[in-house]
Length: 232
Image (tube, rainbow, N blue to C red; front, top):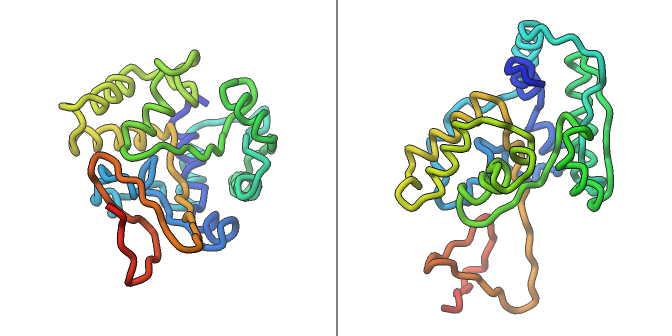
């Protein structure tokens, strides 16, 4: 699938709001980059940018322009656990709306963690990528080919993308400008996108222990009683 317009067509054909409503009971945010807005280096400007908003007509137009002739079904790899299985099923329905044939490859977590590094097993992957604190962590985890034998989690061999990763991972290169360069480049090339950022709920009996990293304290997406006091 070394076809930019095909990749863009598929991304415009996926309805993130539909995924949130149907698979997550409305308990998630739509992503505006590959990662979560709770990271402290998230750029607020991304909230106002176009980020593959669902547009079936545009998806159909791009698919036609791509010249893609399908000979095999698009294999959608996902973990069999909820909500990933349900998300894969719905994404299959979105592909069907584009008259694209698909096949669900839904496996347990052990097989998923094996298959996702094998390019012969899938064409689209739903992967709950997680990494703490800052964007260079999650972006390196997924796209830095130094960490893989096959150029990253989705097999991209792009030297400029690799250069940007090394830049934003350095103390002097971790700037808003460089983070935005990586974000825009990843988006423009439709290599991967963030779809949904599900809420996490934590219930405790008496106390809440907060981990403080690098002297920073924040509570993201938490409903906290008025008398809550952090223990530090």
